[in-house]
Image (cartoon, rainbow, N blue to C red; front, side, top):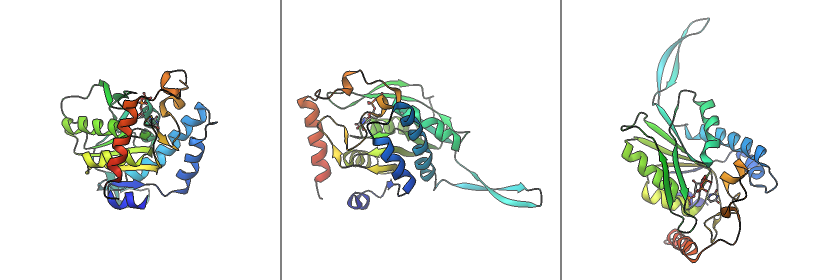
Length: 244
Ligand code: PRP
Ligand code: URA
């Protein structure tokens, strides 16, 4: 884990005991969707707070009931970019922290066979309206979805981009950092690896299904791995072991 942190200075893994405590409940297979959603919200609050630690502030004058003083105001305009669907559960927590943030949704799903992201929703206006973008997505697995989201945001003109996730795989950190080393990655934990189906292990399963109670689809059932999927995962695993 520290090897990964040494290699990727843009990776920030929370050390907060509350994050570790809440992640353990989130991962538990018996946690139902209601509790799962509450935990996603609380964890986003904690990790998102850490992700905002280095944004610039400007000095402002504040009149307290006793005297004037110099206070601070967050300078850049902030955009929240939830990746549909699973990122939706992270929006309210960030809006509680930053009520004036803009929310721009990006719709991506992972093709189950190739593990490549497929874009299905993007209503960004022509030019960037914010200076700092926080990509909200609970899972950074292969890194394909987040790298594609960063591509979209850079084309849009976003000056500074941060990824906020609850759990990452080493493969996803390597892919995103390789493609976009300027993007800070803030996560609650980096897990062991991806499995043959491209799921993070030990992970928590499917973050979208667990939030929204949609367990009936084929993506939730074991045994759907294809040779192509497993090959994608093997390639990613080879990439992160190079030079280690
Ligand atoms: C999940 C997750 C990420 C993506 C991560 O979404 O929320 O967006 O997978 O995987 P990657 O790093 O390998 O690209 P999913 O495709 O399951 O869609 P959903 O949110 O609609 O369930
Ligand atoms: N998406 C999820 O929801 N979970 C994983 O483990 C990987 C991708």
